[in-house]
Structures are given as C-alpha cells and as structure tokens.
Amino acid sequence: MATTEECRGALDTLSDNLARADDDGVRSAAALDRSLSCHITDLDVTFTGRLADGRIDVRDTHDGPPRERAEIRLAMTGDDLVAMVGGELNLARAWASGRVRLEAGFRDLIRLRKLL
View (cartoon, rainbow, N blue to C red):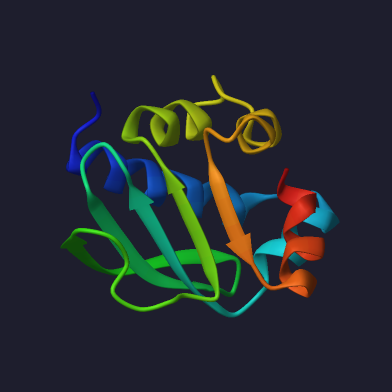
C-alpha cells in the first residue's frame, strides 16, 4: 500500500509532467484555474490545492474526505495514483472501470478528457 508521502510525491510528479507536456491538448486541459481535491480512499487522506498555470499546487493535506467541494475532484487508492503517474495504469481505463473517480463541471470534463 502506498504511503501518504508516496502519494504526495506522485502528485508532484504529475504536476511536473503536466508542466512539461508538449501536446497542445494536454497543455490546454492543464491550463485551467480550478480548485482541486484528491481523496486517497485507502489512506482516508485528502490533498487539496489548485490546478493553475499547467501545474498542480498542493496546499493542504488532511485526514478524511474532502472538507469542501473542489471544482475538480479525484478519488482513488494510493496504489492506483502511484501506478497512474508511473505509467502502469491508464487513467481512461481506470476511470471507465470505476477505480478512479473524476468529478467536475461539464465544461471542465470536456477539457480534461484530453488528459484521459
């Protein structure tokens, strides 16, 4: 089982990957300025912050589910987060199978689909 520190590191790596993306679609999707939460279900820990300027800025970590409703909400196990960022788990397949939950407004989902 992935630790809280490994999950935080995976989010930092994901942020770096988004910032370096050469694909216009990925860059466009990552350019949103939205509040973000990522609930790690098996650890019952939530990371909160913002997706802005093509990066994920994690500002807080707390126990339990998200305290406030972020504009973009993710939920998954720590192992799935680490595997997804490491390229071992396809986000689109994990989302389609229910392993990863991604919730956002309709317009944001349309833009975020480029990340899938």
